[in-house]
Length: 153
Image (cartoon, rainbow, N blue to C red):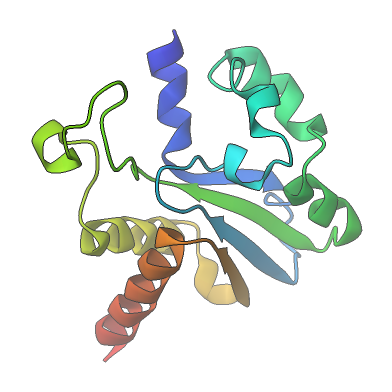
């Protein structure tokens, strides 16, 4: 069951206010190298590490989790709060072999293309967007914006 729930780390994850069709904008958090779309923004990621891939966590604990994505959603209920997850592990766990030998990450262009497609599927063109990024996440968003610009032209 953990592998199935681990798939929830990938993609555009709705955190708060995302179903509000009248929201004034969206804030999208994009984690960095070797991180996780929830743990990256939690003040004590080790506290939630053992339960992050359980069904109970995603259904019941995430909406009440004491971390700043939820805090922002409470403070600005007019915004949709999202977190984008992608494979960003530099090494396979318990080994020193690089990713290219393990197949655990895609090139930045592929990650950016995936993010752009997911944004288009959710009709993000209708509202303003703010990206909050860390490390590699900034490069993914930068490439996403370049790709969106090229696509429009």
